Amino acid sequence: MPDLFDVVRSQRAHRRFADDPVPDAVIEQVLEAATFAPSAENRQPWVFVVVREPALRARIGDLVRRAWEGGARDHSAGRLPAGMLADVDRGATGGLAGAPVIVVVGADTGDVHPRALEASVFPAVQNLLLAATALGLGSALMTLPLAFPAELAELVGLPDHVRPVAVVPLGVPARPLGPPRRRPVSEKAHRDRYGAGW
Ligand SMILES: Cc1cc2nc3c(=O)[nH]c(=O)nc-3n(C[C@H](O)[C@H](O)[C@H](O)COP(=O)(O)O)c2cc1C
Image (cartoon, rainbow, N blue to C red; front, side, top):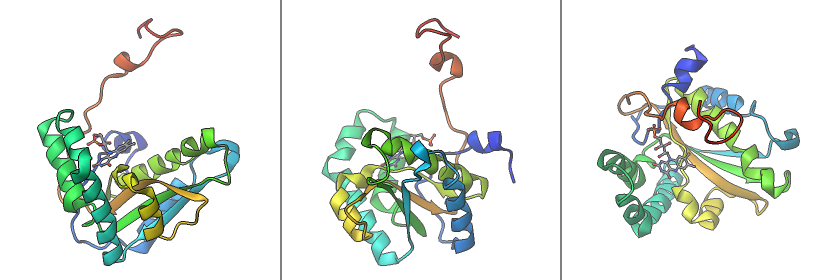
């Protein structure tokens, strides 16, 4: 198993996947890592619906395509570098639906104060992404499908008290990605007061 820091330094958004199957045992390992995340009052309000059914994956893919083609692409066109725009475009117009597994992540609104709800689910999502990377799977945190929350919830049968908060495709990456490009700590960290520098 790779070192934690190597995993952190290689985790990227994968938007295209090979057809190779992903066994349930691997999915369970990834989800178990997710469930070791912290949450407010240890309420663990995360919900994971693991979608394998091809027709259902296609329906989720349609939602993403609709959101992308219905405005998100125009919004992103002037904001993203060309290569990234093309990658997101491929993800939204077939890549997501092409993943052998799509995890719809929900937040149980009955468990946690609204102010802490999403903050109590996204640590689990990050664990999921890191565990997937450690096991050689590609993944991506996606919120585009949330443009149609009611439809997404209905597709996977979420009850009213569970709100969808993210969609994560999982699968063997179609191609390797280079290391993530991130701004250095010195640009993001401050000593004692904002602006004091590092
Ligand atoms: C809150 C959030 C929402 C995101 N939504 C999407 C999405 O809907 N579609 C997508 O292709 N990528 C999505 N991403 C992935 C980001 O584009 C990606 O993490 C970021 O550009 C860094 O790229 P890298 O992982 O290749 O370094 C999202 C990431 C976050 C954190």
